[in-house]
Image 1 (tube, rainbow, N blue to C red):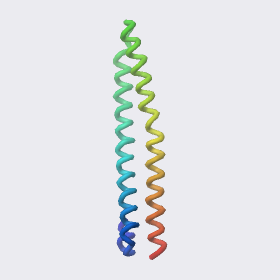
Image 2: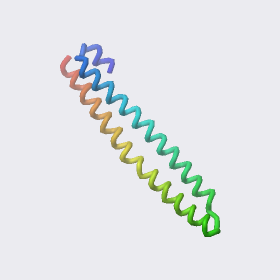
Image 3: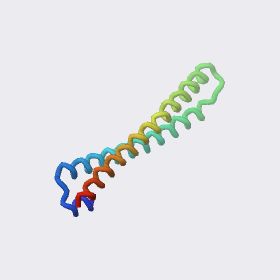
Image 4: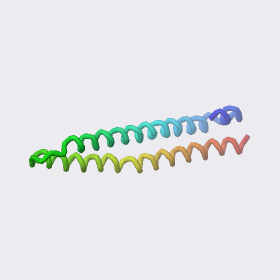
Length: 98
């Protein structure tokens, strides 16, 4: 965004760049948290590899849960990349108008 300020960009374009930058940061934090929770869930799976029927059922469900959490990472990362791309396109449009 510094070059957008240097070019004296219109306030609405600066607001869009700032908003998209916030979205990118939030999605990056969410992706990081998804990876952390996935690791915690996989650790839980590893800790419950017992032979009792209830423990086996819990182990199976924890494994499913870890997979479900893990599956959220790719769409989150895709959304982050798309938001960063949109932010960069707006910023480059400002740069082109300088």
